[in-house]
Image (cartoon, rainbow, N blue to C red; front, side):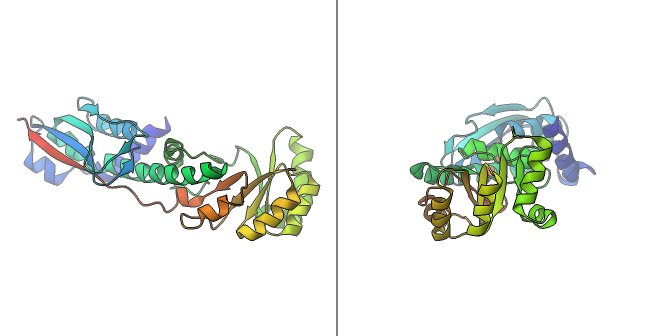
Length: 277
């Protein structure tokens, strides 16, 4: 399973040579109770991942969730409690928090951006600009927040981008090659940067036209040209500060690398709340 491999590698980074501090202070018989608490308002994500981390270190750690993925959590609220070996809790702490903090950051941003899109009837989706090795977790966090996923891998859909066009010679040549080989069933998306390219993509039979790095004003002109003949996706340069201006033009979809490539992690912390033995 992909998640197991991701967690195995993450724990290997921290524990391949042991934990010199915890192993010196505590014995396997020492037990404690701990709590993970939100240190800021957030949309929670990564609970099952955290559970898998703690149980990979020690299956006997008791994991008690108090919140679930997708919940709006206020600063100061406890999201889960742990009871078990003090050594196990401390050894799994940072890895579990790293996953939860990143995933909660993505989910929080996704909820905020999706809400803006919903006001205008625009679908907000992610891109493949994810943390290497963590794409499925990043994209799960996007869905948890209420936004949607674009391609998970290169095999998911046809997207003819600038380098495909440059190497093929033209939009028309690239689309023709795709349709000649894979037939009429898959939808074909073409990236465009000018009105002339939009016209060429339409004439070539594109089903989805990406308007890349255009201003809202340029998008409005292209939208009038497309006139419902293809799905309009806007991408490139869209962020928190200008998202509403792009949504106001009402494309069908806005894809945002900002959902995953540079979103700040949310702050959660683990504290030992009771020494048992």
